[in-house]
Each structure stands twice: as C-alpha cells, then as structure tokens.
Image (cartoon, rainbow, N blue to C red; front, side, top):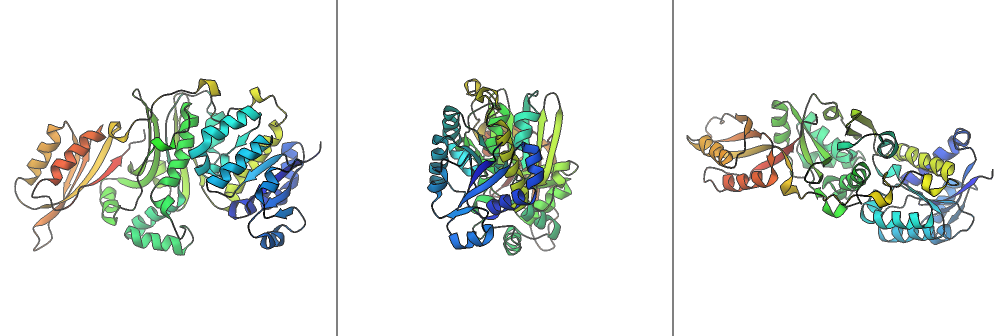
Length: 436
C-alpha cells in the first residue's frame, strides 16, 4: 500500500517532536500502522530555520493553506496553536476531505462542536489525544477503554506549570510569586503564564474530557475557572497540618441536578495517590461504575511526550481511514445523535467541602460568633484550628474545615463573617474533595 502522506502545520516544540519521533521510529510505526507514514510538506513562519531542521525530508512552505489545499496530502497535523487562523485551516482541511490530527485543546474547547460536525459531514476524522495531558493516553481511555462504564467523575492535575509551582511552594515554603519566577527561570512557565496560572489551560482540557465522559457537547463557556495566584504559602502549610495537600484540579462530575465542570485549587487528603503527584507531572483520576477508580499518570507536556500522542493519533487515522465512517469511534465517544443536553451546573449550585482561613482579633466571643453564622446556614464544621497569638500581638488565624454544603451557602457565610468587626482580613476559601 502506498504511504500515508502528512502535511505538518508548525515546527515548534510539538511539531518538531512529532517529526523526530516519526523519523526515529519509522520502522516500528510502519509495522503497527500497516503502511508507511511520511511527512511530505511542512508549513512554518521561519522557512529557512525549518529547512535546516527537516533537510530534504519534506517540502517547506511559509503558506499553511498550501498544505491544507494540497491534493496529495492525506492527513493534516496541526501543531500551531491559537484560535482564528487555526480554525480556518482545520475547517479548510476537512472541507478538502483530509483527516486532522491536532494538539490544540484551546481550539477544540472553543470550536470543537463546529469542527466535529464538519468532520462528520465530510466523513473524516479529527484526532486529538495530544490536546489533553500530553503523553498520557487519557482520551483513548475515556473514548474506548472505559466504554462499558457509566463515568461518575473525573479529577485531574492537568497543567504541569501550576503543579510545579504548588510543589515548590510546599517543598520550600515560598510564596506564589517566588515559585512562579523559579518556574519561569527553569523553563516550566512561559514568559506570559496567564493561561496556566489562571486555570484556563486546565479548563480547556477538562471541557474535552467532560464531553467524552458524559456524552454532552463541548461547553467551555460554562466552566468555572479559578487559578492559583491567590494561594499563599501559609494556606499550603495549614493544609499540611490537617493532612491535606493543595492541587489545581479540574473536576467534572455527574449529579442528579446536572454536570459539574470546574477548575480551582483543591485540598486533597495527603494519602491519596493523586495528592502525591509532584513537579510538572500530570495525573487524571477517573471513577467508573464498573471499574471503580483508575489513575493515569505521566508527562503532560514536552516535545516527545506530546509527540507520542500525536503519532499515536496518526497511526489510528492510518488504520481507520478506509473504514466505514459509521464504524469509527465517534469524536466524543457517544453517537452524535445521542449526545445529551444535560445542563452544566453554575458554581453556586455545586456541593463540596471547604477550607476557610481568616485573621481575627484575639478576644472572647469571636469563635462563638463564627460558629453561630455557620450553624444558621446549616454549615457543619468538620475541624477547627485557632493558632496561638504571637507574643505582644492580639490577633490570630482561625482555620475551619466544613462538611459538604452548597457554594451559595458558603458565600453567604463568608459575607457575614467579613462583616464582623473582629475579622481583620478577607476570608480565604479553598474547596475540598475527598476523591473517594
């Protein structure tokens, strides 16, 4: 059989990683795919640099539309990133009858429904394993490996930059700004880390996993997103004293009222395996009704880990491109006409437990007033700690762990607590998950 011809958009970290993996493991990949796979054309901004990297292995062009319009190319591999131009290129490739492999979680989180619909109409595949958790094959696990299960919830550490920062804050007792600077110096964080530290990158990935797990359309605009910029070393220290660790988690859960879709810092019991995922590593915990809990761990970014997922998708497309479209695994795992309109819950309607920290005047009656506010809103206290005042000071920290309650009730409680004259700071609130 003649080789599959690929057009590569972009030759950055992921694109060049895919090029190298394909070249290095060419024989092994051909044995798995059943035919040769060749990158024949590459589109980049810096043509001269790219020619120095790929040599005579592929034609290099500065025009990406030359790739998506080339009649000889079977599969377009998109590693450019971004939204507008990339969306136009992907849709044009699909219109031209080409399969697409992409690592672009932002593109699919925002425009996935439109892209998948176009691909279905054109009878082509859009493969996106590399868009979520780098080299961890979590998309394949959700779409295929766990097909027999009714997925109950997913909780994931799906951004290596934030996990590295939180690990540094815990290990070294340093504040967020110092840890971020260290991450940037070491290459774990970009010069503009906004998407990472504000939770947006994790929310893009979580949106895709949620759609596959629960058979719903991609709904990024309904995700609740909160980053790690407001966390302090003090909160990480106090969490440790209670036996917890703080991680930026992406959580999606099926409930009777709807689907939770949220990214935020979370206290997790230190004994949980996922709580011990450190540095820039990723991990995704999936709870299925038949299989129970399964944990997927590995490198969530980097040239070759992400390239591993890109090439795996290319092999899948190579194997299945001649298959009857009705026999291919649907993009979101469920048949397109069987997708559900189950609503995504607003954060106010989410039920979970909470960590609260506040600075108060150290005087009689303050604790009683705090517990009365919580009791009036039917919020039960699981644990409470009042730190001793330093010598000569007349103020102290109080830390409260609650049992489960709705977010709107905790918000009401916080508003009343902050109105107390004895309370000297805004209340720090971090959500908690048992993950069991």
